[in-house]
Length: 136
Image (cartoon, rainbow, N blue to C red; front, top):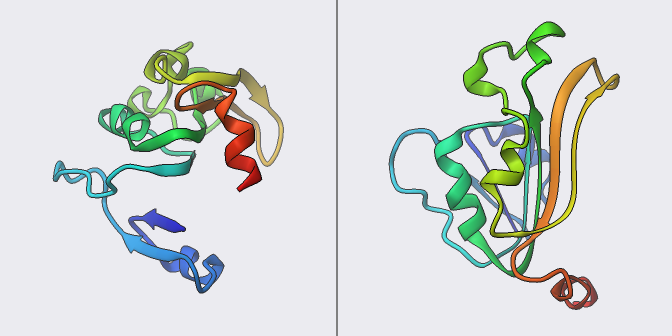
């Protein structure tokens, strides 16, 4: 297992002994060093549009993506307000169109605080590959 963030202090307290923790700033413009072949990628409350294709390409066949972040409309409720950090309607569906979508949602949530978010769960390849991965 591998966990990556630009600030790994929180990851170090959560990672078990079999987890490799890497400190990587994905916004420097340097080549994305994460490679490929990931069984799962989880992204929350983060948007850097140039990384979206690399995230999709990093998944192994049958790998699962779970992505949730703020969307247009959130500027009325709180931060972030900058449109550069807010997904446009359907943007996650468009960005991950080559993946098989399991679920997608655009909605206003109340907890942990009021926000407008988009969420997607998708699989690289076909959804039929998902049960085999879960059995391993």
